[in-house]
Image (cartoon, rainbow, N blue to C red; front, side, top):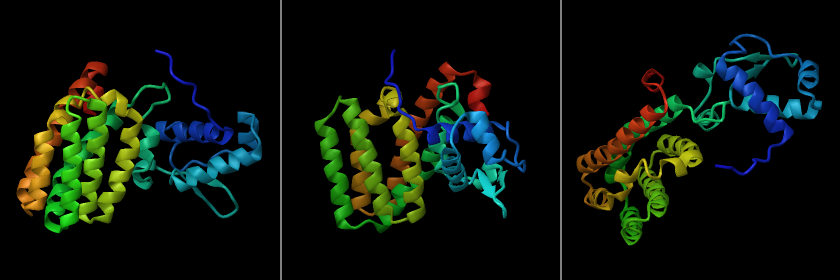
Length: 245
């Protein structure tokens, strides 16, 4: 299937090449980046594009800039944040990285129950009303999985808001930015989870009733079904050892 050609600036292209070499280990942690002049010559770009790309690498905590302007490669596993997930989702080959997808879905399963628990403990009446409104729209779109997927994202966003936990909110934002890149591919994979509107309603009801343990239990059951489905799909596309790593 043909896909739209993605417009890309020179800076983006430079950033992605350097990022991929750092993440793949071609540029080892602790090693210096080539000088700006060398990069310009090797990549055939102007110094402005290289400097902007280096600034982005520094912001992503992939490199550190030392006194005198020299840049050193960092170990991204020890220095980078969740925002890097969205950058790592698609491998240089153009395929989804199965390990990144697996990591995202497992983190979602780990966070979702406690998000629901905190929402039940801390949520106000208007939070419960907002959740009820989303589930009502989900019921009205039963069978329309793209619409249900969009509404499920809205439901979890509202649940995070009700949980009143800034760390969860920022983590959710990073996970959503990554999820948005592969949302269409997961629509059918997550069908069992998306179609269970009664479970979403039950979570909303538990939040309204301030039943924290029930909210957590329901959320766990819902997202773990999605996790199993995603891992099953990944196993069909990649060798089992690659998904399991």
